[in-house]
Structure formats: C-alpha cells, structure tokens
Length: 435
Image 1 (cartoon, rainbow, N blue to C red):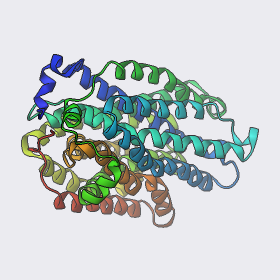
Image 2: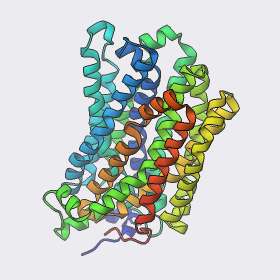
Image 3: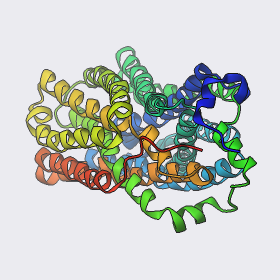
Image 4: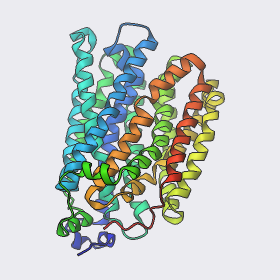
C-alpha cells in the first residue's frame, strides 16, 4: 500500500501531524540548531582566537579560530551517516530529538570551557571536542527536518513546505547575531572577552528545551510509515546510498557549495575582516549583518514559491549565475570600508544565499527514495558543507592576506561555478513523488 504526500492535509490520518505542527516543528529545530552553529561562527570571528589561542599575531589567532570553526564541518557528514542510519531505520521523529540533544549539549558546554589562561592547552582541546559534537548534531538535524516537512507536504507544495526548515537558519542567525550585537552595545571590550561571549552559548539550553517540547509532539511521517508497511527498509542505508545513489549524492553536494560559500564569506570572514582590517566598530558590523540577514529571510519564501511554480533547476541556475557575478562586487563594496557600500555587499550576498538555499529543502530529499532519503539528503547537504564552508573563512583570510579582496571575490565566483555544474547535471525533481 502506498501513501501519497497528500496525507499532510489530513492530520487525523497521519496521527498527530497537522500542517501547522509540521511547519513549526521543522522550522523551530533548524532555527535552534543554526542558532547554536552561528553563535560559534560569530565567536570565532570575534573572541575565540584571543581567548583560546592567545599566542601569536592577530592573524594567527584568527586562522586558529577558523580551523576550529572548520572542525564541525568535518564532523557533519559523520553525523549525517550516524543519524541518517537511524532516521532511515527507526524513523524521523526520534532521530530528530537525538540530534537536537547532541547539538544543544555541545553548544551549552562550550559556554563553560575555561580559556587558555586558566587551563592552558586543555582549553583548545576541549573546545575542539565540543565543536566536533556540534557538527555531529547538526549533521543529523537538517536532513530530518527537511524530510519532516517534505514528506508531509501536499502535492505541488513541497518547495513551500521545504522552505520552512530553510527559514530556520535566517532566524537562528538573527537571534545569535542580535544577541551578540546587544552584548557588544552593553558591555565593554574587556567584559565581552572575559565572560560576555559565553552568554549566547548558555542561552542555547533554554532554546533546546523549547525545541524538544515541540519535537516530542509530532508523529512519524506518512512516507516512512508506508516504507515500513512495504518492508522497504535496508539494513545499512549508507551502503545502499553509496552503491546505488552515488551520483545524486555528489550532485546534491556540489549544488550546496554556493549556499555555504556565500553565507560564511559574507558573515564569518567579512565580520573578521571588517572589524580587524577595515576597523569598522564591532557593534556597527553586527548591526549591518542583522539587517542583511532579513533580506536572506525575505528571499527564502520567494525562491521556494518560484521553485514550486517553475521548477528547482531554473530558480537555482538564475541564483547561481547571480552569485558568480556577485564575487566581482566584493572588492569595490566591502573593500571600500564605507558603511552603505559594505551593507549593500552583505545584502546582495545574503539575499542570493536565500535564493539558492530555499529550493534545497525540497530538492535534496527529492533526489532519493524513502529508504535512504534521510541519509542521502543529509550526506549531500553536509558534504557540500565540507566543500563550501569548512575552510571558506580560512581560505578567504589567506587569499585576502596575499592577494586582497579581489582574490576572495574570485574564490566566491569559482565556488558558485562549481554549484552551477552540479545543478546543470542533475535532473529536475519538482514532479517526483515521495512515496
């Protein structure tokens, strides 16, 4: 017996799942998870270097901080293998709860790790271990949240439903950056570096409790229930994925590169560069990022609507071509050091991130059958993170030091071109049935 996605429109048939509950549960989890992740990204740009790697120049401190930033992206595919296995074997709901717990505990504990001045080299070691834990948790989060939305979506609305997990990062970033912005305004530099930066990490515990309450109220997705009834589950989803669905996994990962590169170069790298090199006051730059991320949030529903109407590939192709061109704006806009032009650059990059990111909530799940969908969507998403984000701030910092911002802009354009190749080589998935 097969189950159509239209089941989402019939809450009673799907247990406790109503459209409102599904939308909120898929959104709130990714918002919290990405809040946790962006808290670290912001801290890495501002204080991780001096607190945990105090020896050496400011550049060396920044590079060390960005290395710890990249550790989580190495861990994320491992998390997608681990949580994807259980998500495809025992279900979406319990796996999503577990991923949220791992991510939240790791983030909260980072707020308690003493600095190098207190415990020496043990400080960066503990930081790296917990950063790895963040990556493991987030590696299992996104794929499950996307499946929760898309496997419950009515016909013709998968792009729209899949957009809600994609809104989570905008809200999570706005919350984390807004909190850092408020701290920057209310605390002195000494207070901020001493204890203020820890506050956003500790706030994560409260948000995780909220997320768990919402996640525990949802029921399993209709598509997974149908797969159980048809006895379609496989023993080792990752083995099946790599042996039978290797090409879609690779193409999905390539498609994700542009999203990550746009975001982390416009936020983590640009924040570090703007504060340390251009000498823009930290509160000013954080305020500009808060404004720019609103445009990312606005672009997300517009792009999702267009992806349902015109298809995933046309929307992504337009967005990626624009991203390629945007690389040429980095030097004249960001490099000017003038607040209006820097803000314009951040708005362009984050708007295009929203355009290219929104269709992924539907596209990646649509590339895979139900029995490996959690694993496949998660692995593609997180492999794209290794290619596009793990070393993006580090590479950008090195390029800026040696060739200036034009080199960094070229890096953004090249990364976007890689995604364009991936999208051009994949099939259109809008009319795929998630059974």
